[in-house]
Image (cartoon, rainbow, N blue to C red; front, top):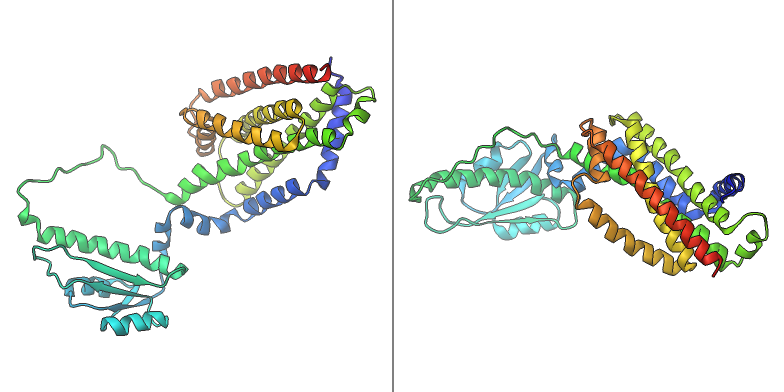
Length: 356
């Protein structure tokens, strides 16, 4: 039978000792930095998620070397306020680009729009440059317009009418909010679960590697009390971190609905991971083996869970935007049932190890 007073004492001791765990402190500080400055970091991070965000940057004009006689494409660049095209010889244009006097060089082929051969356009930009990414996105829009004009010019060659596909309802896409709610929030909220699961392995296995487990067992606390105390300590830091991240994200202007439901889902899912990690740590009693087995097991479990449409990650996204279905309570109940089963499994493994 677990002694709740001893479990609470051990958990409090482990929580106080977390300040000496440099790994978890650095991880928490990193999450804190992301959450505090999320509104600032969103611009750069969402651009990595969807480079087309760079196309919205305005107010800057870029000099473009145009090496060719295609007047249609040249006029398209001339009408765009972001570019100032200059007709130049290819060699001179590439030399100016190398000296960074130009932002890019566009070199279309000599094929006329109504010719039989395809029209090719070669684009030269400066490699490994953030400016090149902005320019490439903006030039892409111009080239798409140019392609549309070419299709219109050459449509008489078609011997059939293309099928026009019209969606049943227009769908507005916003990669900025897609990145925030679809990637950043789940990653930030479930990061404490991964940290705590790795932490519970370290807390349990270090007692065996430092040979202090026998000293602890000489006290009134049993092995079950010791392990349960360490598990409780790792679970307790989950709601604190998650609540802090939710508050900081809200302060940064990111509206998150259903805060209580999100907190419960994250806590129960995190508890499942922590109990799995604790079971592996007690069974192997070696940090390297336990961490490797746990990492492999988590990957397999996550792949199986993410294959389900009603997995906790999707539900967190739906809850955050205020559109979660009612069956999310059933998923929460399933997570709670999984925790109960894992608690029984952990206790059985502890007893097996204790009397072996």
